[in-house]
Image (tube, rainbow over all chains, first blue to last red; front, side):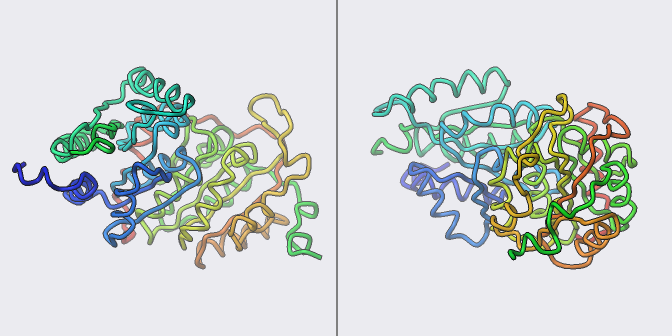
Length: 174
Length: 206
């Protein structure tokens, strides 16, 4: 990565990483922090986009697509992740399905709502207890390396992965 | 009289047998159609009907058969895809019917087995035993081609329509409380590998 890529907005880098890795199916549950990425994906005909009603559906759709030969990714926020432990534990993990989740981290570094900060604290313990690879991206210069490598590792090892978008990336001016 | 009360009412539908109808369905699958078997008895009877490589057997994630099937349908639009699920399961994920309607996949058919029971946990009653109509819900969610199978012949005709016409389609079937004809081997890695092989080695253009 050249230093000039640091000027690129994180969402633009992310779209490039998805294309570089042939990920063309995106399921998401709306989230304001994810909006730059959602807007970029919705505006790009490369992607097939499905907006289901729950994160469980979003995970199951990309799981099914993977088994039929198409690479997908799913976008959600922390509170949405808190609803899918059973789907991960009974579908993605035991069936060895590379469900790649992009989770915008809400509930820390300036949260104003207690419920959000409490549910945020459940995220890493759940990921760790399920043995799911996870990294938080904190700077836009890291997007290509972390997201790209996590996507490639997930598909190579047939395991789910959680790419966490820290407020250091999405809220901090840089 | 509403559409629901016409020829496709739950009240006029014959109570049939899941195992027998699963076999009738599978007998019609001549083009390597994918079948996603929902948790419990839905996939136990699918397993007992013969272990086609294009079958996927869920071991958990209750209610998500239609969502997994939607993913398969999106990945391989030229292959017909069936989801088999129970009333108790789909009642947990009613939003998924709207998701299917919004995507509008021509190659997806959802079959719902409705005996009004959480049969596998001791036959406690589900909401459908108290008047909730899954076909009415499906139509309200935007799945216009949703019907109650009135008897075995009607079920077969609806399956033929799913195979030969554009979907999405939903077939709801009233069934009895008989036990399934078998039990799926709980080996998720093998199930996934067999299914992926079954979809990859197809002579079907995808």
